[in-house]
Image (tube, rainbow, N blue to C red):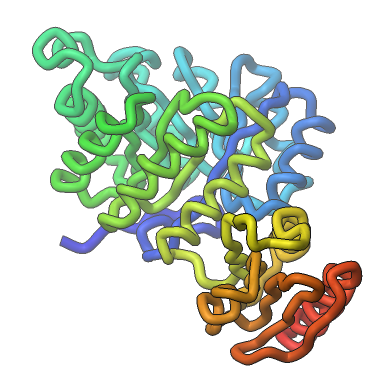
Length: 348
């Protein structure tokens, strides 16, 4: 069965491309701060942004925020069908609701009628904290309970004529998350929003998200991703793109490969690798740059690089397939960055 496609603003889920999402941390009704943060997310490569709607002021602010941003905006709603309706009327491109806490079928029908009128989709987001009680008592906090809970609420929306749906079944436990999405993918053809919820602070959050999201993407599961970090949301976007690249799902970027270094390294390989990574981050070109520790293995291991550098005893070798030049260690960074800029300009 072919996958359904769902349009969110100018983004289409289910067409084979993976959209990157993040969520603001500012109060949505503080329009200036919200817009500033969203523009930073846009610059980092965010495709879809979500905002929290806690009250009517947040819902009404959506209109003002949307006028100043360039990516689709999703309103995140809990506990209130009324706020969901108001957010849709204020111009949200999509709603995220948690049916487990938004009320019964009457409330869901109100949301369904509203989003149909405004021709926007809904994400049915289930997590281990909002499993329907009858499934929780029967299956416990399990993948089965998550999936059944999400699909039961999908059926309610379908009953009220809503077909533009996206589904998520998140947990903070990585194996549970992966199993739940695997089960869900076998039972529905709606687009899936994948992620590991409450993943933690930056370091562990990236590890858990990489393992969970990466495992699913390599199975072909997932249409949009959100990396959840207790950190600056811009870092979520960077991490999401890195996961897509590691999975071979994003091609238009400059890859930087570097070795872990050892006692044979006689120049600041680590520092240079970090600077090169920062320089090419966000560059929309296909390329490969190698920053290698020594000339023993470096040029050979990175022979396919578009540009590379490796350290020697008193010099560094700059190479592109074959050795191009030898430069003094003290000038290696300066000269290599000059060659890097030439490469980037030539790729325009």
